[in-house]
Structure formats: structure tokens, C-alpha cells
Amino acid sequence: MPTKKAAIELSVNFLVIILISIAVFGMGIWFTQKIFAGATKQQETYYQQFEDQLDDLSCGNYDRVCIGKDTKRIDNSRAAVFWLRTLNVLGDEMNYKISVVFSQAFDDSNEI
Image (cartoon, rainbow, N blue to C red; front, side, top):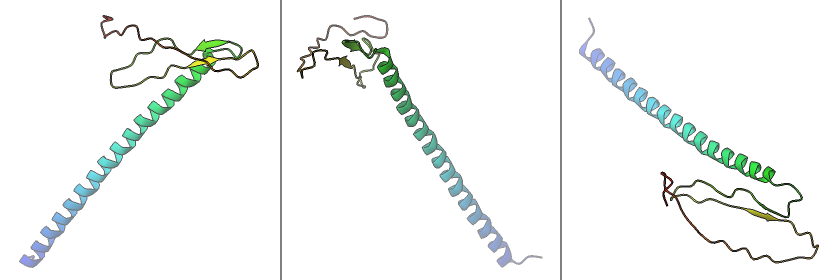
């Protein structure tokens, strides 16, 4: 028959194993969350690079003026980049002035 001391020792060992198991499980959840959050960020980066490469391909090498995209869908909390590429066929270095005028914005139901 086990003594009280042995029973207490088994109980303490059981509690220590439970605490270690909970700690390891929590670290596993944290690690998994970090991996998936990093993968989502990496996916967004690759998608943006892919979109930029497609924009570059949409203009021919000899187009004098080329706009990558004339429309983009963005939220209020984000910014977007519209690029304009010009080819100087005159040979002399030139300065260009590009004026951009905001005209309209639309909501989700295509209302102004």
C-alpha cells in the first residue's frame, strides 16, 4: 500500500506534467499563429510584386507615354500607386510636369 508521501509525490508530479503540457501547447499555438501571420504578409508582398510586374508588361518598350492602370479599387485606409512611364524620344534631358486632378470617388454600390 502506498504511503501518503508517495501519493503526494505522484500528485505533485502529475500537476507539474499538466503545467508543462499547457505551456508547450500554448507555445505551439503561438508558433502556429506566427507562421500563418507571416505567410499572409508574404502572400500580400508576392501579390503586389506580381501586380507590379504585370503593370510593367502592359506597356511596350517603345510606347511614348504609358499608364500602368487607369483605375484601382482601394479602401479608405489604404494607399495605391499609379505610375506613368514616358519615353524621351528627343534625346535631350527634359523635365516633365504632370498634373493630376481628382474627379470622383465611388462607394460599394457605385454611387458617387
